[in-house]
Image 1 (cartoon, rainbow, N blue to C red):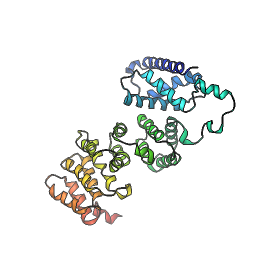
Image 2: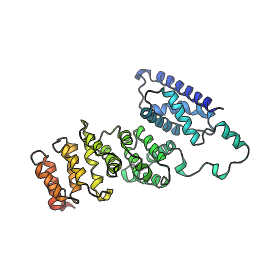
Image 3: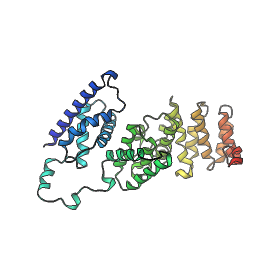
Image 4: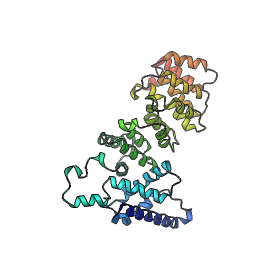
Length: 345
């Protein structure tokens, strides 16, 4: 079967799925939080005849999620069934789930060579499949807490050490679009040198969509934005723009992104100039989440330039929040954020 024929058939199936979904969810005006799952269930059996091997519902669900993310970023105005069909075919061909005619002809002439056999290395697997797998692994944990989930993430990071950066980035995208395990997605990218080197302003904009809590803001800042800024992969103006955002979480992101500049545990080498330039913008902010982040940013800078922090507090004494004065002054004089806690340690 010609590639164009397969693409057309996948497009037709997607249009049929769209029509069926609209009918099934007519009462909610097509609103369906788990639309990828519904579409995957509809398509999985119907697509089987187009592929050289089966594609499970979980893998198909993740593929739909990744196609949706790519469509919204790359061509939001394009006809979605046609775009998804091309996206599907490209991915499935790469992973050996669809074989073009010329490849089929060559394969029929004799057994495949060792170099042409599918690799069993996890790094060679479709990133959509990997995303679905890590989600399943996490959901199957008897206890789902940060240490246990991180142990799963570490296992995948070790296996993906030699993977292409695009595999890791696409895997993270699939996790993010499903709304599951945002911090795991960020850590997967952070722990892969090649993927981390690819992070620039466009990637940060994409990976930062949906930040709506202190933990998602901090994970994004500590794992992606801060390290990329530290290594000059993004310009200072981007962080300063975030600092001026009306969104409290992006203002917090700007401040927490200074932590990797200064925290030795996070690869910081000390950067008073860039740290204080962001702190200057937000010194009078009274949002609780921003105030806490300002205190954190200044305290992390103290080991590198104690005098600069002291001068900053003195110069802004009239406007800086009482919490910031108390915690940063305590750190300056006792090396503790809250000295009273010493008796309870």
